[in-house]
Image (cartoon, rainbow, N blue to C red; front, side, top):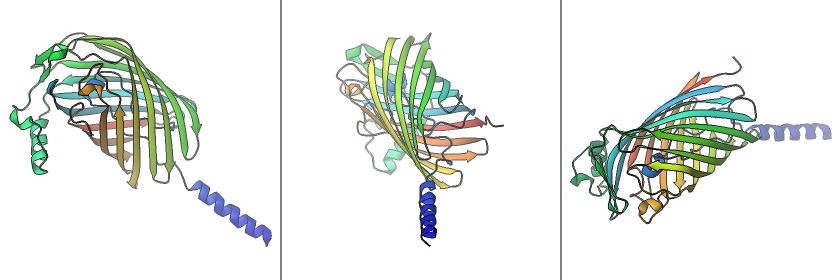
Length: 325
């Protein structure tokens, strides 16, 4: 009788222990990059999962982001659109090592978001902050204390950059994942108003906790600019810190909702609003396919309205090549 009770107790404990699982969390956080004006034109680490993908798997990914920049203060005025193409591949070599190579092209171009944003603000009685007093679809950056006064730069490249990222796995259990990643970043814009180049490095620690159909993600990172030169730009801090956190909920099989918060140290080496922390939140949806995933997301600035992107919309596709096949 005593042995039977012990066996039943152990069976219950084992069942309870095995409930948490990250098996449904194949893709981690949404594929997304910061859209704050000064952070998006330099290397800024992204929120990553603390868990690896399956051994031998290769992920090919691509995304497009359309964002509207509106920042107006006593020190500067920014009013333009930026669009981003982001593509790359991720390879889980073994249970410890993961490598990623990606390319990001950020350019100015008319994505016609002004009308949508003005109508949205009117519908919810949100202050336009002067946006409705200017012509739509303008491309202006004015910052007299930095000697910047440019306009009509639609079509110009803001960033053209490659990033090589490597990640080492420290912990990988049913519920806990901890990894350390380092990255090398090279940007080269060889013509136009924003001509310039930079070389940057970063390190980040990623921790994730998974339970049943939910996951929590967090990343803390440091970035260093060892070489930076760019026309018509604000003076940059050479070293920046960042913190990112996210939450995933699988509503139904293959349907996920995501929420992220991002905090970035102010990038400007000066006294304007851009020297203050930038804050972004992301709301997103993911639909998982047999060999990939489609993601839709909205990026919105919060807290400080004059040093980040007004709003950004993104669509992404991630294709998984299984190493076991």
